[in-house]
Length: 456
Image 1: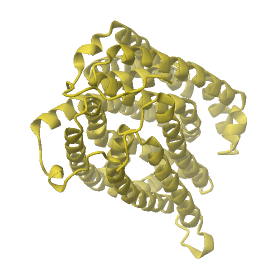
Image 2: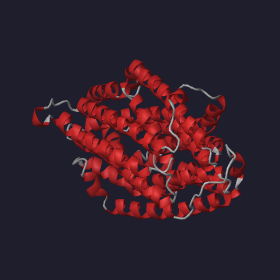
Image 3: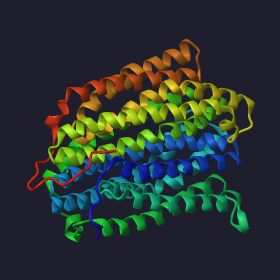
Image 4: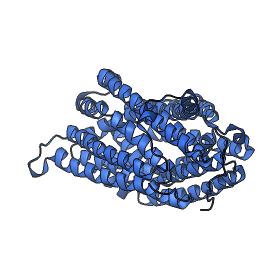
């Protein structure tokens, strides 16, 4: 077993940044390799992945809640209880994952049939969902083990496992999509099988690694001992966090539905635009999650002033790096899109929405840091109410107006999303400054607080 590492933002963030970068590279590799099959294949997998994101968010109810509760218990030096909570959260996530996989197996074809897809796009989508959806419970388990590993401060180990998973996935793609070295040439089905195999291998390594780093290891009985108090605390944070994310992804699904009426060029452009924009907000994702781990520990140890200043410092870094990366993407937008396709219409339309990303991504960088920090304090319900008002009541109607009445097409969708990100970002900024979150802590320390560095 390892000693608990000192928690500094940079130490936590850079492995998560690389891990998420690798995860996104896996998605980009899928897109690039599938573009070798056809633009229809890319569009189909893009639609299915939008559903997969929503399913993964359902499965992250437990992961999100457990990460905050475990972090606060570790901050309060209640390590045996944090271990029991970890085991309970793994069992709960496994059960949720099985339910989601069963749902996709039973209703996947019906869902896709109502998404305005037709012909080859629909056929590809059904193939991909049938394979990846059936084994989505593997991702549920990966999520909880990776989350717990990071919460204990071992972000570097999580990064190395993800690196191996990505390498295996890309290798599997090369063999199964294109039939290298006599392997079957399976196209979209090959990409799906490669995803399942790489996740299976990664899960085994994640399980082994978590047991190596825990100060107090999980006992077998902990997996089947259901404590109402622990479940309540996990769900108090996890349900609002998942609802807020679910609302966001559901709105993205509605926007995707809008785009299906704009034709295959807009649908493919949306997928390529999203594939590029991921790299712009990647740093903010890592900083947001790293900050949340530190804030959870600090709040558990009752060091709220340090938590307050830590978040403001993280926000400055997030915003600065986002602007630099986004401007770079804008300068090289046509070359970047050209990596995915040689269709002139798609290149032109995707380049247009990348130009708008400076407005969108700066607002998103505010959200990614502040939302994670508010959740880490236990103030997750506020983010749900605000998210619903901004996303559903403001952003969706605005998108409909811009796309269908003002005929702004795909650009209208990007502007509507940007309006939501900025609205929530400003409100969450005011919430953090008000310090109303200080009353939301989930645990009180029973020993001397753990040493948590608040420096960068």
